[in-house]
Amino acid sequence: MNAAGAIASPLVVHIVHRLAVGGMENGLINLINHMPGNHYRHAIVCLTEATDFKDRIENKAIPVIELKQTNGHDPGIHLRVWRTLRALGADIIHTRNLPTIEFQLVAALAGVHGRIHGEHGRDMYDLDGKNFKYNMLRKALRPFVGHYIAVSRDLEQWLLKTIGVKRDRITQIYNGVNTDKFKPRGSRRDCPGPEGWLKADSFVVGSVGRMEAVKDQITLVRAFIRLVQSSPAARERARLVIVGDGALRQHLLEVLRAAGLQDTAWLPGERKDVAEIMRAMDLFVLPSLREGISNTILEAMATGLPVVATNTGGNPELVTAGEMGDLVPHSNPGAMAQAIANFFSQTDRAWNYGRNARRKVERQFSMEAMVKGYLHAYDNALHQRQTETLRDHRFTSL
Image 1 (tube, helix red, strand yellow):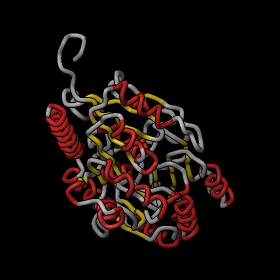
Image 2 (cartoon, rainbow, N blue to C red):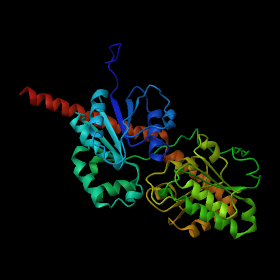
Image 3 (cartoon, rainbow, N blue to C red):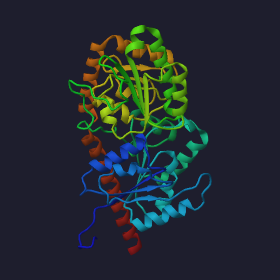
C-alpha cells in the first residue's frame, strides 16, 4: 500500500547491463513511456551504470538504480541484485539478453515469482547464437525463466530450436514506433547539419546506430565512396549522414577523409534530434551484421523512407524487398552501393517505397500493439505469481 492506504500497482523491475543509447534500451524507454501508469509501476536496475539516456524517461519518479558492476568477475553483484529486488518488493522481473539472464536465478531466490526474459538480438561475441558455453548457460537457466519474449520471429525460432524452449513459454512481440514523432517531411526539407553541407537537389543517404563492430558502418562508408566515384552526378548530389557514436567513429572519419569526401559526409555523434535528421534523408541504410528488430529501421519507415538493409536477423520481417526497400548481403560494399545507386537514380521509386513503408508501420508496428503485447505478458506473469503464492499458502497450511 502507499501512504494514503491505496493498494499500489504491481512493480516490474527491468534489469539491463547498462542504460545508454541502443535499440534494446530505446525499446525499454518507449515501453515505459507509453504503458498506462495505472497498470504497473516500473524500476530499472543497471548492473553497471546509466547515462543521461535515462532522461528520456518521462516519469521522473521511476527509480533508476546503478549497481556499478566492475569489469571481469564481480562476485558481489548477485548479492547486490538480490538485496535490490528484496528492497524494491519486485512482483515481476524482466531481464534482457545474455548479460542479464543469470539474474533469473537470483530473482527466484529473492522470491520473485513473475520472471520474464527478453531476447532482443546478438552482439559480436555470439553473432549466430551458436556459442556452446553461452547456450549451455541459457539451457541451465531455462527452468527459472517463467516466460520468454522474442522481438522477432527469427529469435523465436532460435529459442525453440537451439535453446529448447517450449512454444507455449514464448511470446513474439515486435517493437513499436512513435508515428507522431517519426513522420514524413512536408514540402520543405530542414536539416540541422553544417551550413552548406546540403543543397536543394542533394540525395541524402542516412543511418543511425551505435558505431560498434556489429553495426558495421564501415561497409556503408565504403559503399558510399563507391557510389560517389561511380558518376559525376553522384559526386555532386550524394550526401551521407551517420548519427551515433562509438569505437568506429574516428575510423569512419579517417576513411572518408582519405577518399576526399569529408565535406560530403556528416557524422555528428549522438543527437537528440534524430527524428528531424531522418526527415532530411532520402534513403535509410542499415549495414549491421546481425539484428533483432531494428528500432531505427522502424523509425525510418515511419518517416516515409525507403530502406536498404542487410539480409539478416529480423530485417526481412520489416523490409519487404521490392515494395519498401532492398535487402543485401552483409559485409558487401559492392551490393550495398548498387542498391543505393538504384534509389539515387530512381527518385519516384524511392518515394513510392517510402510511402509503402509508412503504411506498413501504421498497420503492423504501432506503439499501441507493442504495449498491448507486454501488458498481456505481464498480466500472465502476475497471474502465475498469484497462483504460486496461493499454492504455497495451501501447502504450508496443511
